Length: 165
Image 1: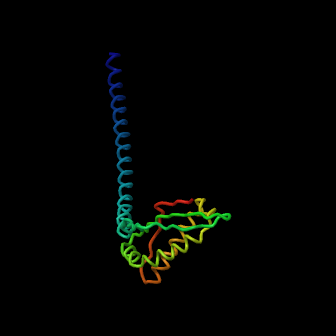
Image 2: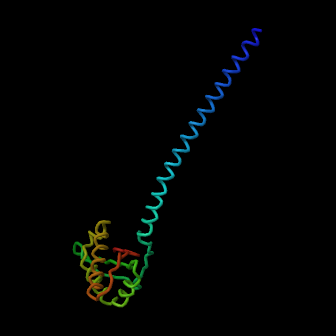
Image 3: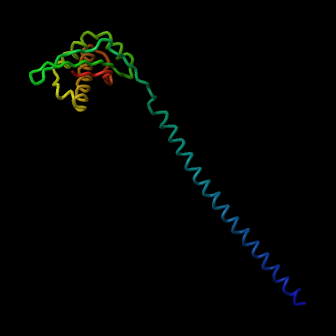
């Protein structure tokens, strides 16, 4: 009889434990489902914002290049010696029309760049800063010519080869 008295009490505790486990699992499941639903509803707004931003963002335009076939060769004075600088130049633009205009006005552009390159200091051209400054002045020179002729500006000029002697 002692055994029969313990079993019904044991079965009641077992049922209570199973019921508590089921309730806890149900609560955790509902919590996870609610969190996912809340996060998903927030993502829909973010996706809509991303779509509208993508529509207003600029489309990537690849660069176009025009390589000047003849090098620039100038003499530079340095400490009483005559030095030489040879530069191969290319133009870069995202607008092909700007490069077409530059080709049309190439004699004037070459003349202005030749004057610019010939006026440089030999010592300055040996430093990265001097070369970078020359690139910047070169872009300004080319764009002044293009602006004067009513054409679109180029983005950059590039040194394809740069030799000092």
